[in-house]
Length: 299
Image (cartoon, rainbow, N blue to C red; front, top):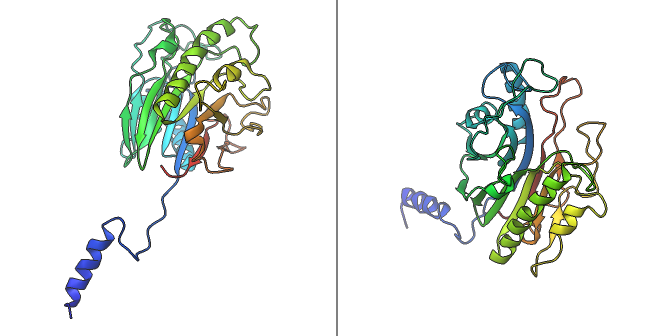
């Protein structure tokens, strides 16, 4: 008979190994992926088109806790230091766009005396996850220093998940007649090439962010371009399809989206799309956009 201490040691070794027969395994945790436009989030108090004080950043942190996401694609953030005021470095790794500052500046609409700060995109990734940075999708800038680049990362878990965070040209939420639509239509093939590339490489992938576009409208031109079935096996799904936005009563259609390719869609937890709204008495709202998120199984 083995001494009791050796049995305990053997049991400890077995628990540390995957595949020990007869022992229950802890169920895999879903991966929660979110997108959140933080409306002119500046590094310093009292500056930019949405000047804030510490209490405002604290409110954003509380909503980030409520969101409880593993990966957050954020938009309209000045720099990594600004992102860290909402996503503390002891809990998140921040990956920011490498787009140079255009130095254009200018006055803010609705905030007299304030100057526009840089608006960029990036990711906050929960510590404990492994993230690999891919090359920024600079082509989304179309050579214009004021247009945002895409940030491209891969989350390396049980299986890799490729993510592209975008903030596309505003002013063309539907149709093709508005002046801004010409710019958006030039950005569209860049997104499509990225989508098609993931199909060819066999990667599970999500394009997420502020598309400034009501993609769920019937016959939307951008959606028809992207979800065209080419190359073979290219099938897209729009998280939250058929649901109405509740963030702002004036707008019922989402412009913040998570677009999943076929391989990512196979892992989508049914019914998991969520819009995290702000509390009714929280006025002014912490941001003019609410976070949207999904849960993925098997990552």
